Image (cartoon, rainbow over all chains, first blue to last red; front, side, top):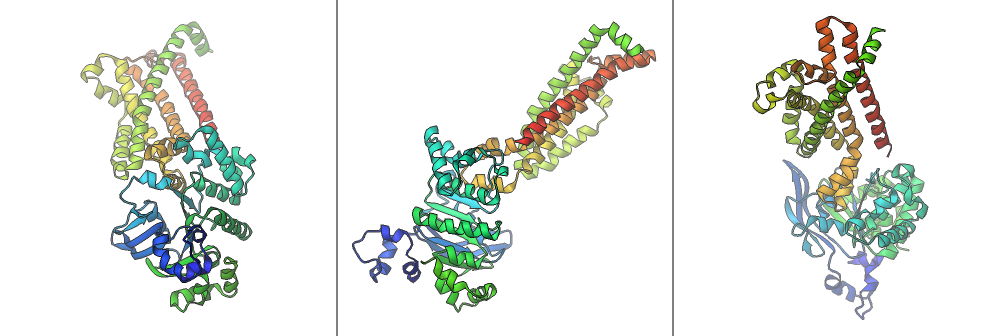
Length: 286
Length: 210
């Protein structure tokens, strides 16, 4: 709870309780005021004899950006895919908005969750406009509303609406990733899952997109689960950082706590990334 | 040249046999596509079925064509009319390239694209019709192209069982030991194959360009 106070997730100001939210009241009010949007309860996942995830317990609160940090093969992406049921846990359950996600219609579940992946996965035979407008269209929105929405979204992610008629291969990597974000936001989902979305970009473009992500998140207050192996990115973007190692959740800490943490895995990560992390961790809080 | 004189003299018959030939190839290709594309889709989604299905299609391909026509001759309803028989045999031969290319085409769609689609909440049929099939279209079409070119050649043998087509000239020429009669069947058949290859190839490139 301490971390929430530090970073003030955007949801907090929205809860009007008539109390000073920065007082100790917050800690008491939080459990009822902010039901976790996503909750992992004793989740394990395995394929055959290989245990990919074991005993994950994790809560993601409204409006926060929870970063899943870990090396390749630590189970970050698997954890993410359990949320929109691209994978199903072998033990335990995942609750989305308080309901076990295995209980309802999987298509409805997924349409309420934006999904952005590293390889973007834009449909190469669709224009930008059709890519972004796909879910609204299959949801049966009137054509006019779809068009307006697409234009709004392209502006939102910093793209000129003139790009709407281009095909993905006619865009730069950064533009494609922006379109990917716009597409994920199309039906205005409450939850956004992002799997190393900026991983394949050059450092300058990545920096630009990270900055835009922060400002976007200040306006939109989505509940975001963000997968990365880059500690700097995690500290910069995350309200909290969940460190994973070999299919287990090692610890969940706020960015500043993470840098100072004495946890062996966390400090190993901090050592590997070297100096200057304190400033990165603080910058996001400003 | 004797060939051209022969063709000019018998142009009505050449035209008739060419149309017959086209009919055999066209109908069998349509059947093969109607069976092969859905089969290819099914085996692309259920990897367990891929070996038996492709294996059987492969086995059919290895049966010598003349033997296959012969085998089918005693089959009741089919044996009554030679063109039915020829169409069935040509359909069987055309299956392999169509099934295989449909399978490869769908399997070859970028996994990230498929996963993104699934993650966005597309149903399996939306995924198939809006994403996988359009993206596999050029590969599937190239399978159809191969099937057509094979069929144009094979259909000449259908004349051996009396199904007509340009093979008539070829067999007649063989019997008469007259090259110009053989060529009167072979040249139009070759032109048909080239034209089909070129036309479908053009369509394929159009599809790929998107």
